[in-house]
Amino acid sequence: MKKVFLSYSHEDVKLVKQFAFQLSLRGFDIWMDEKNIAFGGTYTTAILNGIHESDYYLVFISKSSLKSNWVGAEIDFALREKIERKKLVIVPVKLDDVDMPVPLANIDYVDARFSIVTAADELAEKCGNSKEFFSSDSGTLSLTSISFEITERTAVEIGPFNEGITAADLEESRNQLLRTLRKKAHGILMNFVSVSDFDFQSDIPKFKNGLYEERVEKKSGSTSGSVCEQIQVEALVFNPDEKRVKRLLDERLGVLSVNAVIFGFSLAAKDDDHILEIGKRCLNKIQDQYIILSYDHIEGARVEISDDFYLSFMPFENVIKVKLSTKYDWQFEKKMKDFSIIEFVEKLVSDSL
Image (cartoon, rainbow, N blue to C red; front, side):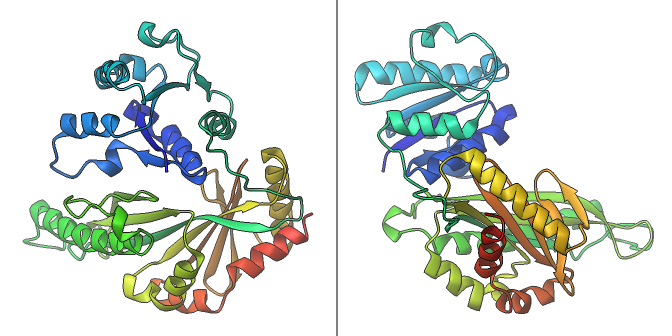
């Protein structure tokens, strides 16, 4: 598996993660600072080692990255590494309509300004890592990613009716809950990682085919004027082993406190436009059969497919994403056992071809 180091400005992290996802689908081992640098680890040393151990160095060129001292330093090191070790291949990836920095001006770049999928395909083809996902127009489904979400609120609230409870108490409650949820999310990811690929020396686990994310939000508490914090952690797995997915969904959702699952499906289609068109027709079918309760450009259209059981559907140019959740957390495990996501999406797709 070819290892790819990603150099970027953190202002571009959303686009870079999308690109990383596409490269993972094409069989690359991705090195990103936020998933490969252990908490408390030496940042500079980790960066230098990451570039040294990689086969490809991808630097994302944008208005933000051109202003980044870190990106500039990483480019300099990569160029020195290239001189000393011919093996390293440097590939600029253009995100914005800007001029290439002088050190990279004579290097062929990949243009991702218009389509991340096309850019990933181009890079994979150049690297001999292109992957045939689609062989026909039959509508055959392939599970390319799965994401497990765990969301809980702190037990501690601060407010006018919570005398003696301070912001420090809320912070302690948040940190304790974060530690618990991190362990569960990392445990989920461990089910999909080969032991030979696992870094036992790292304080924060590193996963070649997965990502961990966490979010903290202020929320209204249970009494008037009170405030608590909501913690959401997410374990995202690329190209998961479907037997392990089935076992986890069938047996362990309740134990792990999972309260939402997001599936990423690819379809047997010749090009990305066809996938998007099929996805749109699927959305039309959903529109005909259900009442759309909400919509946003990330989760898509949300409907209630049975009592307190919700499905969100969103077609993208290269993948169809389907999120399942319930009104109450305690309902989720049973609802998932009684529902076949594969049958639902397969029927939706077959009716839309």
